[in-house]
Length: 277
Image (cartoon, rainbow, N blue to C red; front, side, top):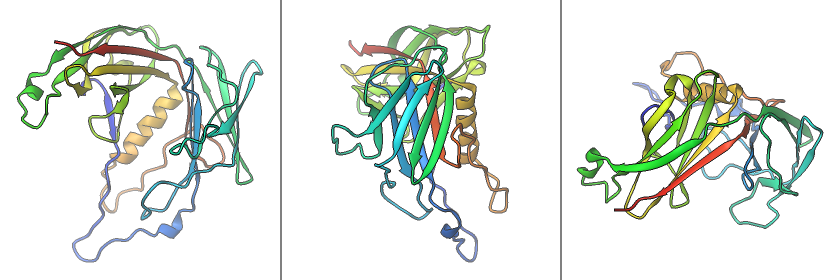
């Protein structure tokens, strides 16, 4: 996982040497959670709306299925989103554009969500993304020698040029045979210019592949605010202040009115390669 900042959503265990410490779940009222995405590629635009739950809840989070959702740009174009129009079983709480559209680089987009009698808004700008020159692959010797790997010891290598005369921020997603895949189930991979050199000559992805697998890399531009959101989340998850340390702050977000989550606007570049002998 070289050169990538990794956020690991680890489970938190609280205990003391005598009596167990129990969180007061009544202190936190449920909040709206909004996960919005607008890109310059067709088929990516969506908004997922749910409600937060208390610390001890298990199972899927409650989904909001009756919100009014719109996205507009700074040219006055307005796009209405509708809830799960195809009735997909696992898509409760997911809204997609009534009329398909793609975002444009340089435009600013505003999300508005009306839910439970409240209005939530967010704004983000669509920045350009670096184009990947190519993907390659190689055998990772350490993985190959691991008896538990089960044949997945090829790593994909990414080649690109990162413009050093401007500040850029990136989010990465990795797929194996069309399935979004993580080294650990809840990893998120993002980076800025400090972690990426101008010439990226074969940076290895954190996902390993078998022969005949299709490796796919998606590279997203994110705004400075997006990077701050992921950085805050990293600090929150990796806080090690101890039992009596300060309570970590909620990650800063571009959403108004106390909503959790983030409205992300991104350009996307995609690379794909099949692992062959």
